[in-house]
Image (tube, rainbow, N blue to C red):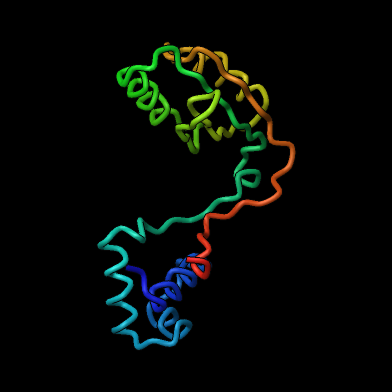
Length: 154
């Protein structure tokens, strides 16, 4: 169970995961030892999965983003497993979700250019034998992007 203390730690770490334990303890009004113990506990149970740098895709050279909706040919577990293995191996695919509805999966894809995205769709995606249908939706403008969960709502 996530306590109010844990929520303060999680909210603060989501804003700045690079702060020292001393800074974190100060921001959440806890002793350093209590804050360290709570943080380690959140890591051990998997609430905190890891720490990473968040990059700006455009500034890192990835000017094209698209969402690709995919339908799978066969509704067998082997087909889905094969598709998921291919997705995990593709560095252009940042996220992939299994869905209900007319499409089986939704993928978030990045590329450095339209040419690179076209190559990905025509040369990489088309080699996945399980795909029956795919629809690509180009992102024109990103309205909101966050990785922070709203801990104050939980």
